[in-house]
Image (cartoon, rainbow, N blue to C red; front, side, top):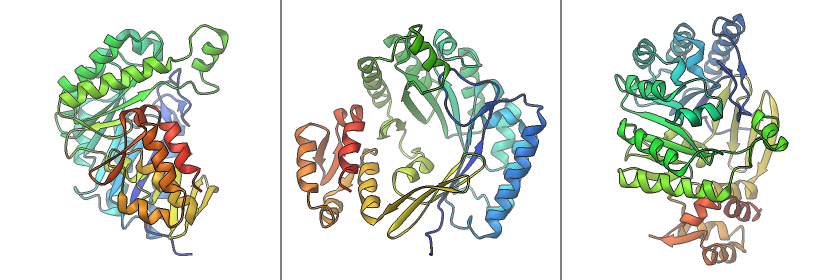
Amino acid sequence: MQFEPYKALYLHIPFCVRKCAYCDFESCAVARDDARIDQYVDELVLEIRRASKAGLLGSLQTVYIGGGTPSHIGLARLSKLLYTLSLSMHLEPEIECTMEANPESLDARMVRDIWALGVNRLSIGVQSFDDEVLSILGRPHGAKAAREAVRMAHERFENVSVDLMCGIPGQSDESFAESVRVAVELGVTHVSVYPLTIEEGTPFAQRVESGVMPEPDDDVEARHMLLAAEILEAAGFHRYEVASYARPGFESRHNTAYWTGVPYLGLGRGATTMRQTADRRERIKDGEVLEVLDAAEMLAEDLMLAMRMSRGFSIEDAEDAALVFDQLPEVLGDLMADDLVELRDRRFRPTTRGWLCGNQLYARLLALA
């Protein structure tokens, strides 16, 4: 079976200085000098080299080093990884190479050196510029360190993104709005806004179950998402994906690959790979096939993923899909009647309500298959 070439590469670094109270990612708190990090990095270097020898890295357009907290492992280990990448796939400037960092482990030397080694986009896990909210989340940094991290990043990087969280119990509308305004004032080019979700097995889940913390309020989350849109769009950002805003030309190409059905390779513990042919799509994690989609399921998923993007899909795309799903015109009509989808400039696009009620929209498109 001949699979399409991978266009995106994800490298997973599963280590943090400590685990945040809301986090259910595949990550663990490990001291920076722990030998397990060295062992993991050495294994990841071998994975990169094997992938290169197998011819899997020749068509890559984006690289994303995520976690965990990649900056936590320190400059020497990051340099080893980036040097291996540069030898294995010719990390050219036209390839978008993103690295995640947290304020407590980012310093000026790291900024200079990772930029020199080929990273050209920095994504900083800020979550809030409010010390009280950061304390609720259990973040290992304060608001001052978050501001300083963004300022340091700009010493080399033009393309700087920050993550912000909203709908956090104890987070006021003004606190969230001020965090968005601070991000704009600091000159970032990209902002991702994520509503808090309570994940099973996390300290937050335990607090909710015991009554110590209230469940996140859907109305508050919706209000915060609308506030983010208002502030960012007024500042010249545009919303190109359900949770992502960018200045023109600074959209995340790697994240866009996930929403447009581009095959991606995941290396490292817990990283997911998506490979496909014209009529088969597979998702693989740790060598195990998690999911296999046939051609009809692929098409339904592509329609759903397109609705995560502001551009949606074209009338022509819909006409082609209706040859497979004869109920699609009726489904689109219902979605428009429910104000989840609109037809604008010959494209079906999510409405504001569609952004806020995405699960309803996505489920009805996936149900086509």
